[in-house]
Amino acid sequence: MSVLSQLNIIQVAGLTKRVSTLEGDLTILSEINFSVKSGESVAIVGASGSGKSTLLSLLAGLDIATDGDIHLDGDALSTLDEEARAQVRAQKVGFVFQSFMLVQSLTALENVMLPAELAGDVNAKEQAIALLEKVGLSHRLAHYPSQLSGGEQQRVAIARAFIGEPKILFADEPSANLDSKNGQLIEKLLFDLNKQNGTTLILVTHDEHLAQSCQRVIHIEGGKLEQISEGGAVNVG
Image 1 (cartoon, rainbow, N blue to C red):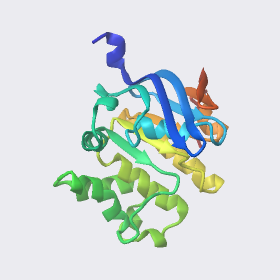
Image 2 (tube, one colour):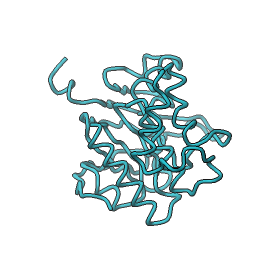
Image 3 (cartoon, rainbow, N blue to C red):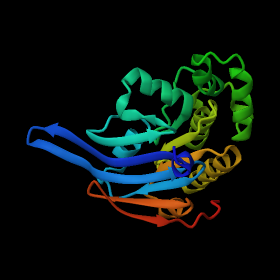
């Protein structure tokens, strides 16, 4: 393995995704090629329907490509079945969704503990408490999602994503459902944790300011990679 490939935690080659429709095959992504270095922050941008959320799902192993390869920290996702991909996600990946995706019947603490408990971590509670304190929610441990604001729910979701100390964090429009103040808070939190933990951050966003806060910006248009540009890597907030 070359030094370059060791540095690249994500390598994408010839990535293509097609789906069958009543009118024939529809190409959502075509011949996408790029790599991401360990610890890097990268934004994926493009118009609605450009394929950026599909790309994120493929990178995270939530979906499978029609053609091409994705190597995620050395694992070739195209060679793995669903069970093996789920194991890779559990060991290496965190995911923050636009819609929070919290379990409504669990408290904030229980939501954050859940992935660690499923992995058999005996220190799940202590880790969850520490993460909720880090995201400023130590006073909300026993609250249910319905008792939390949108910004607080997203902070719980971020704490949950980080409990397994993932090497890579994927975020799909993480601040889209929030007001400006809470959106900026969530963005700052993601970048702070990215830097503190050395976590590779890959996010999909419509927000130009958020995109420019990343080190690099991948522009997707009509399912094709149009450009990779340098971001501003400025401090958010």
